[in-house]
Image 1 (cartoon, rainbow, N blue to C red):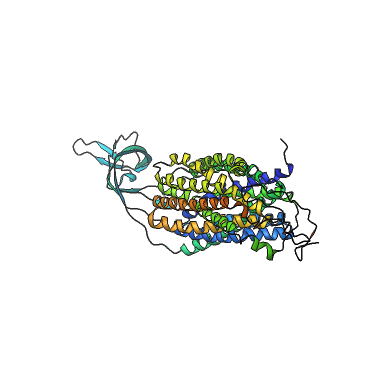
Image 2: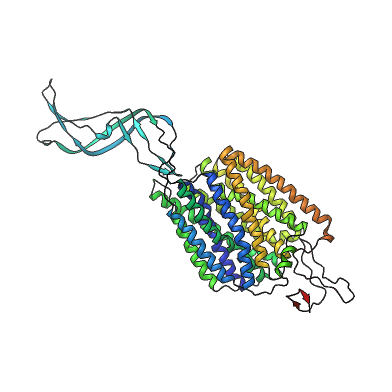
Length: 559
């Protein structure tokens, strides 16, 4: 099998860019919750970030297309994302945290204590024997535990009503002739009723600062990161030429990046946080993402980018990309699938943290499992799409979303969620490449970056901007499991829309207009339409049947 050497660097960049998702982006909302941001506020922050990302994708694609400046644009975006994400480390900790009221009992809790004790000389009046009494300070009527920081909550346990089984040390003048000494004393504590009192307060002194800083910094980071993949997609499709269905084989290397860094980051955060047992520390995640961006920048400097000339001017190309009803329904399906995907991306980790409180390394394992099923479907997506067509892949993807939402709401244990996440292979590993291939087949020449930016912007930008705040509000009002079931039903409805789209395209295949076709309308001297036939979505494009001369860009007419 021949290897396309031009695709080696795009494969490396997919590996690096998507590694940032599993090393940092999937932990950002948990990090922000530690900084005092709640689910509803997270939804607002993500919504703004997704809208800005939607605007940045086609704008950056259009700039890169117009000036043929893919490398400079990619480098500038990497710098912007690094500045935004790393700036989030400056967010201050909340001043106070809420503590719930709980009452529980501990019986016969023993401990060994060694320390300095004040020895009180006493004399037994009955036997006239002298002895030292060793009262241990920790055996008084109350004590406090060390603070424990977990998920943004500081827990201080106040032990009340303690009784100590004190021991006395007999006085022997030859050995103990001083008033203070180092004493080892075994004590038994009996806590009759330990009350965990509520010390919460409405501390809003730094809420506005944290929320606004989180909004600005995460938006800057997403504005820089969001266009990276769609620009790389445009470069990849240009290099693939007449074989856009081979896109999945190249994108598959990004899945390998997610798999490796998901495991690495999960265990790194777990180990780093164990060293600081009083809190969960995400610093290692930010460091790893910064290193990945630096390596990606070095690779981008030598990236080969094909040059192309636009066949249509913007005023004529943009309407062609939007006016066909079939293309319009396609855009709607992109929005709906982006909304469903955004809920898992933004809230799955937060939901699991609330529902099961799993160890940090679990998230690395979970995302690694997702990638294990995603990568083969990326590789096979071209073959599947060529057999059943892109619309059928959309239907399968929405059904997978519905089933995944439902099963996630039913699992009683976080580890049982691992096989459920295998559905991610169908809902993303198959569905998303089908969308990009559909768009690539219909893109006018020289408009790859713009069209890929538009599709990715609708999916990761507007789609998620619609779904995430709705999910955040539902979680805030109804809780995690009801929200998941609501979205399961919504995904079934989305699948019905996709099924109608698929049936309509199969009933009227000959009437399919080339809404985004690179073929320009051609008429002969006798006025007869000699425009080459164009395949519909799901079919391979036919080769032009007539020879066309050069095109005058100013008037879009054949010379």
